[in-house]
Structure formats: structure tokens, C-alpha cells
Image (cartoon, rainbow, N blue to C red; front, side, top):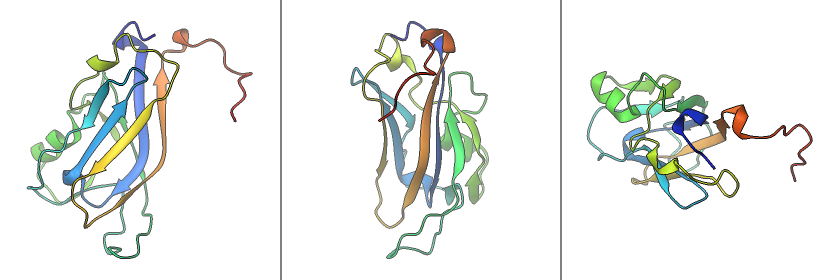
Length: 152
């Protein structure tokens, strides 16, 4: 189990999306609790991307270039849309570490074993995005040596 948020390092995703303002990004932990990484705040505001999306592929989606974004309890940056609203511009949110919109409290006491699900909910259908990979990182003291684990 996760006894303390000090033992959770980060959840990271390499992704791109043509308009982050319509995304809700969530991490569902094995207990079913939800950590909101990026909260949908409505569709108003400047045009802000994740990574380098192909913004002209409405009818024939093509993957753009993903940037690596991490959500971590120790991030200096606020949640992504808070950051974007504090730095009004049109363009790409820089790769890096951000706080989770909901904080990481829902993870406390959850089992480490089980299904961890990264979910992106696109609340406006005229754009698209891609997740190229994602990962979780915990303090190594929580997890036994896994050099011999077999991944199927």
C-alpha cells in the first residue's frame, strides 16, 4: 500500500493534444479512487497545446510530437491550466512537472498491486491527441527488487 505521499514520485505521460482546455486527465488507482491530474475548467481562454499536435487533421488524425508531462506532489508548477492562465499565451505548455488539480490525497492507503488507469476525457470533439506512453514512479523502498519480474 501507499503509506505516505512521500513514497509517490510521479505519474508521467508523453502526449500531445490540440487543445488542453477541453481535457480532463485522471488517474484511477486500484481502489477506484480518482486523482484529477488536469481538471476540465471550460473551453474559454487562449489556445494552448500539449506537445506539438497536428492541428489540421480534423478528419484524418495524425500523431504529432509528444512532450513528457509529469504530475508530482513536489512540483513547483501549479496544475497545467492554472499555469496556462498565469502565463497567457498561445502555444505549447512546456514539458515538465506539474501539480495535480485535485492533489494526490485519494492515493493514500491504496494498494500498489492492481489496475492503474490513465484516462483522458476530451470534452469537445473537434480536436484530438495521442498518448505515446505513460508511467508511474514510486519510492524504490516500497517495491521489492523487480529485476526478475516477467512482463507478459
